[in-house]
Length: 505
Picture 1 (cartoon, rainbow, N blue to C red):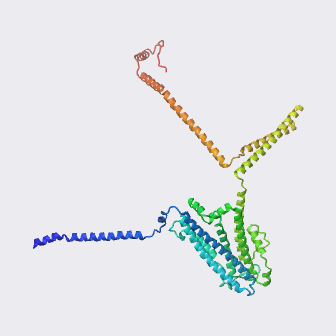
Picture 2 (tube, rainbow, N blue to C red):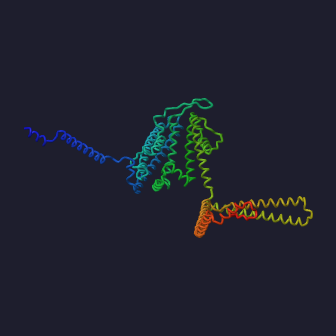
């Protein structure tokens, strides 16, 4: 029995080893499940990171990007016409409501206009959001930004927020009866604004969006220009578009800026000052020319002071117009100065003309100097006593003055150069390179001569060194004659008749 039990134990193995094998099998199963899950997760996982998306599609498809670009421009064109229509309706609504504020003649028509303005404003905001999404998709297709990025990861979100803030205020039919009261300056009378008037005041800033969209329909705003900007790492945005417009069409751009600014600030001043006119006589006698005149002289930074705004809102509008006018005037001055700068050929013609004029002046001074010398010679020939003669001193001083002026003209003539700055720099660099090459050639010649001299003088130098070593060795070895004469000198030093032998070198 014991033998059979032992055999059965040996066949079945150690219980501890069987437990370890079971754990190993279970561990391998869990590991295989984890690996399979990771592989499946990698398959199903979307590549949504910016780094992964930038590794694919290194080149853009120009046909696809052109389609997306034209879609974006169509949306911008539609947005432009909607904004223009909204501004026309809001001006019409304000004029009708102001002229008939004391009666209820056109209340229904005014409400219809207000509903249209509100609906068009909502449509404009929706179209703005769609247009920015189209621009985002265009930038993705043109590889200007990674494909996995959204609008919040780009600078488009700032422009979208700014335009949305400008588009939000608009007069509505629900705010027609609400008023904002204030005290008039100098008279302390109670005046008021309608809420719709203030909203119309703010809504006029949409005119700047018209100018911004109009820049996008120029010749330089295209898909090819965007591709070039991407190559040179330039942001293809409103700032770049404005700079190119100023450079390509400076006076047309300035005219557009002036017209937009004149419309915005003159009509804002009109809305601000009309709050003081609430009677039938004042309404009928009011003239728009006053606001137009004040706005024009403010934008041009003249400001005569004959007419000025008396309300706080009007002064705020003219303050904005003043800053706008300062920027516009400085921009006009810079453009005019750059336009009056001569080109290289014109500058060369001007310098040649200056040289010709200086040549004529030098000839005239030389003629004067020769004439004075001739007069001095003839005067000295007639006069015998020339010492302390004031006429001679005056003539000599004239000659010195003429020679000094002619020398100054010669210096000015030498300083005038017909070359432009780039040509002068190229010529000077060529001269410097030629100068350094000559010195380098001289150093090479000196080095080669030194090597030749060393080769020629080497045997002589060796012989001189050898003779020097021989003489030094011979000096160290004293001959028997020298020793004899030294002993003789020491023994017979008292005898002055003996000849002394000394080494003299």
